[in-house]
Length: 100
Picture 1 (tube, rainbow, N blue to C red):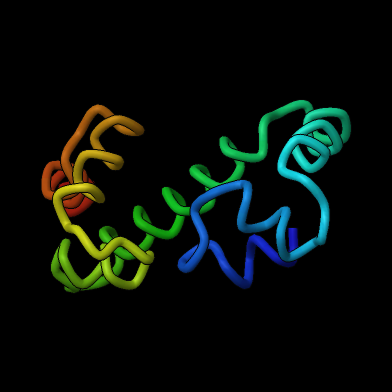
Picture 2 (tube, rainbow, N blue to C red; picture 1 turned 60 degrees about the horizontal axis):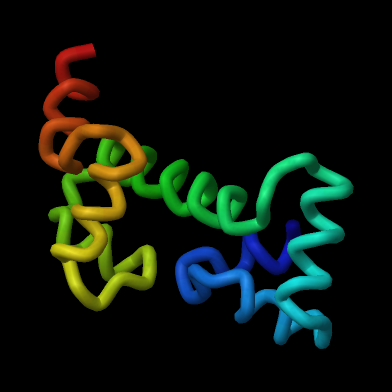
């Protein structure tokens, strides 16, 4: 959890966290699923999405600036990731949040 909190904006893959812990990705996945009941990949995605939503709702940063802050070099990849997770584009999400 601490590694994720410190590195979610840099590392998006389970393998990176496994390497930091000096264990295999498979071992990390088994341990996390056993303890938390959810795959580590899902935990990583949820943490990235939480920060993306916070930044979209509470700042005037552009989508590109948010993508860079979250470790995405390609804005279009971030937008695609966000849309898959929320069924909305970052701009649509921001618009809805500003109306609430």
